[in-house]
Amino acid sequence: MLRTFLRWPAFFTILCWIVLTGAHAEPTSDSSATVVFRNGDKLSGKLLRVDARMLELENAALGQLHIHWSDISEVQTQNGSWKRAGQREDDDSVVHFRNAVMRQADSAVAVSADSARLFVPEGESLVFEKQEHPAAGLPQLANTKAPKESHPDTSFAVSLNAPESVAVGTQSQYVFGGGFRVLHNEPDLCAMPSWFSSLLATGNHTKTFEVGSASVVTDTYDGTLSLVNRLGPDTQFAGYVVADWFGNSSLGVGLQQSYGAGINRVLYTNGCQEKKAVLPKGHLLSVSGDASLRYIHQSLYSPGGSEDLAGLRLAEDLTYVMYAKKKAGDTKELLSISQTLWVTPMLNNGKAVQAGASLGISVPVTKSLSVGLTEEDDFFNNAPKAKPKNYLQNSLTVTYTLPPPAK
Image (tube, rainbow, N blue to C red; front, side):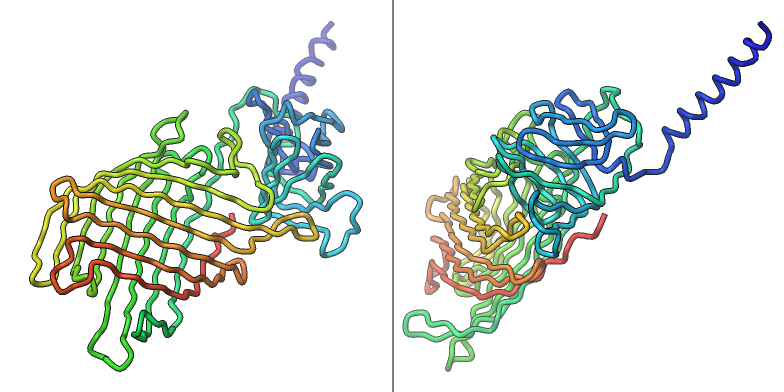
């Protein structure tokens, strides 16, 4: 009886040691992925294979499992590689990644890994290897909450307008300039961002010289600072506050300051299924609209003066991205087209209406370097006398985007 009594503390001590050391163990190769179920539960293991119907996962305690996508919300994995089943293992067939997320999209599986995008349709599968994950080796079925989605890091882009000669009617011009763009936490097109989410700052400056008339110089500049936040957890609408500045010597606008607040919404995109991002085949098309109330202070060239205006700005934005499929099954961006159209009627001065439009095409040269051509048009109905109301300019730009820091 005494021996039995003494065995229980020893057994309990050993059991506690096993549980504690298992819960705090260093990551192993058997904890390569985390499966997040639709009810919020999670299960860690080594990801072996993925197809459109199910995935194969090897767990240290449960062994090899086959889990149907109908039970899965998403799968997260890090620092590994995959190849299409049946392909030879060479440099063109193996895709290496740092962070990958997989979700079901109709009858396929959408895979987003760093900058690579691809679908796994019916009849095809991916084989995974060399994965690492910070999760523990024991199964995690404690009804824990799904992890928060990670957002992109702050990105910084700088662009230079290549010195170019353009013809406007019978006049020849030289155009010089450049700009910058800082984006903190890119908004999710499907779920919209949450507070504090997306901060955008841009600035541009160009000079246009008429050939043979050095004294005729057009100086244009603009800048924007905006903050976007979701209005609620179950809405596609987002609210934003914005401040922008504009000047154009050709239009006679010395400085226009605009401050306001409004709402925007993605009107259409083929990159979303309900509130989750999917990877469209061939191309991405997104159309969004926004409306904002603005306070505008204008300082115009003589004989104009200063004006305080209240306006309602209505805008539409379209983005089209074309992709090509690579040998390894992931996609590569071929080009992107952006289009913007806006109008601002003034509530206290009907003659001071403003409008504008832009159309641009950008072609990536490398992951960080791209070349683009942009055409812009600005219209100010209350431009000072002797100044045109319309200004059209084009620019050939070279843009370098700093890659986000590795996590």
